Amino acid sequence: MIPQSLPTPDPARTARLRDALRAAAFTADGCLDLLGATAYAALSRGETVPALRATRGGSPLETLTRVFLLQRAATREQARAALPLDDALADGWLREAPEDGADAVRATVDVRPYAGDAGEDWWIVSDLGCAVGGAGGIGGGAESFGDKAPDRSQLVLGVGGASTTLAGITVRTPVRTALDLGTGSGVQALHASTHAARVTATDVNPRALAFARLTLALSGAPEADLRQGGLFEPVGEERFDLIVSNPPFVISPGERFVYRDGGMAGDDLCRALVQRSAGHLTDGGYCQLLANWQHVEGEDWRERVTSWLPRGCDAWIVQREVQDPAQYAELWLRDGGDHRADPATYAARYDAWLEEFERAKVKGVGFGWITLRNSGADVPSVTAEEWPHPVRQPLGEEIQRWFERQDFLRAHDDASLLAARFRLAEEVVQEQVGAPGAEDPEHVVLRGNQGMRRATKVDTVGAGFAGVCDGTLSAGRILDAIAQLLGEDPVVLRDRTPASIRLLVEQGFLEAVD
Image 1 (cartoon, rainbow, N blue to C red):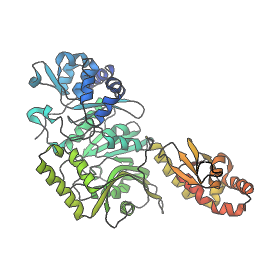
Image 2: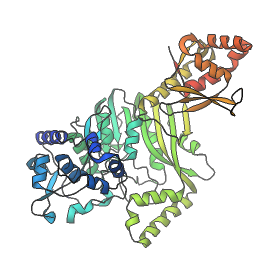
Image 3: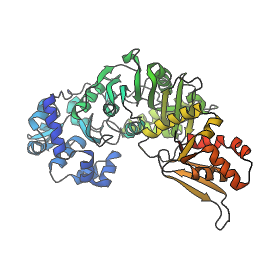
Image 4: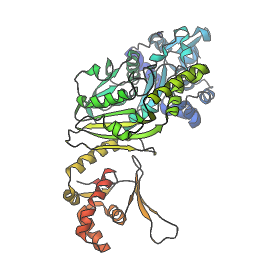
């Protein structure tokens, strides 16, 4: 079934609505202050009871939170005190709700306050029941449509953990062109609008393009070039300085939901995105996407994913989590609301998922992010690593610096590396590990508190070298001084240390000064 018409906002009326939302503090910070940390965190899990308890006072902010986030009816009087009611009804943000009383109104869409990279007040527009907590069993708000409930396969989600993860890892340098492939409700296109002169956003679902248009309009962002189609088909041979994608990466036995199921077998959709990306990147351009990949019996996942990489592209692949087939099936069955179905239907769908994994000899599914840069290098720098540890978002600058470090290391042989000057990165500390009371530590650890928050073991020379690096002396002169202190042959030390320096540079503990 087709849902009732989405809002068709008039620019002037949209500006008045946006002003009203700001005036009522219906913003990310305002909602956090109103709800408190407990209720706000519960919303991220799809639980609304704490938020309902916190919004019983009837203030404009409480009314807007109930109407747009919690899908509750309000009286005309309450709505008029919070926003330009006639405008909201005329443009379709609200509708008459006689089922709740002669004087009642309800939202037609979810509107979630969202903070931009520089603290901008933005609002993400999505289908009812899909604004908070990611999917969390989609369609929870479908009853608000009455007899015009949408086709659940076409639902458009709001902001979830995947959206914020991708936004956090994206490189935010100013660019001429950016492509948001699979835009959904327009979260990534909205971010890109702050640093790209022109944003193109695509989606196979025309409803998603409509929601992205609403998100950009309500947030006061520039219009994007919205195009319908799958993968790179809508953009032909065009090239972009930045491509971002939170694609329908779920590995599933069927195509039930457009926002998550790509309609290809296994992880083929993610493979296709990666393989074709180079043909749509400008020189030096980045492609950043979230992905799932199969862990197949007898195959290293790193070899599987790196085999997707196009020629001439540096790549950093990070696996954040691995789930066994049963965990993975249960996660996405809950996402689709199947846990609310009758037990027989749930069991049949669960069985179909496990049958598909067994057929493909899948022993697990990895989740993570892939960043490519079109460097044109004959021997690209490729790193695929497992990193389940906490990181410090946003990571966009750290990812950009990682690729810059690859350029530096590729351009410096051992001799030029020893001639370079380095300084210790910020927030790096040294830890000594050993038995209590021991005269000397068993080993020394350098630990960073920025970006990936890495830790690496170093020997006495490595610790001494890192501690002296302040950008004034070349690496070679520092090693000569260490050799003199330790009574070692400086030639031998110069010969065996560059590999350790390269590792400290690659992992971000040392920064080149020149």
